[in-house]
Length: 170
Ligand code: GTP
Ligand code: MG
Image (cartoon, rainbow, N blue to C red; front, side):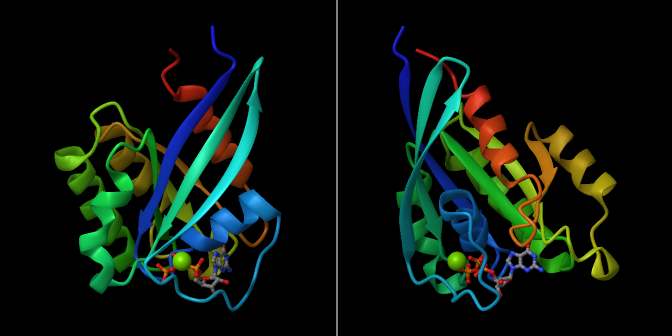
């Protein structure tokens, strides 16, 4: 078969959940304490080797601000994968993540690989959303779940790698 796969991937989630930070960590291995809020969306690409294949991710990092919500379908339409990001220290961001999941279930590609990322896992002392609650929600809704930290890099490559493994092969 074809050993190279291109996969459109979109990140969705509340303002400040850490979407851009996860992408920056994955693509450039960096973290910025004062990451600026995204305007519209930003594009990145990164290639991963999975077994004997390469997966080239074409990544759309969307803006969480509500005024950009109407742009989101342009980015998730035709996407092979989505990472829905919330901040474990912010309950509202978890509520917002569940709304994104609902929207994707209604309007997204039915074969989309969906991951739920509970980001800022380094801030354990400020945690407001338990891992058990999020894991249960993910299981019930057909997503896979990981807690990540763009700051420490924990589970960042892993979440992209898991997605790459789950993508349907031609
Ligand atoms: P919008 O573009 O506004 O939708 O936000 P976003 O989801 O892209 O969030 P962004 O990556 O800009 O991160 C917001 C803030 O959280 C920044 O100050 C980051 O430095 C911080 N941040 C992101 N990820 C982490 C993390 O894993 N741990 C900690 N401690 N801070 C983080
Ligand atoms: Mg951003």
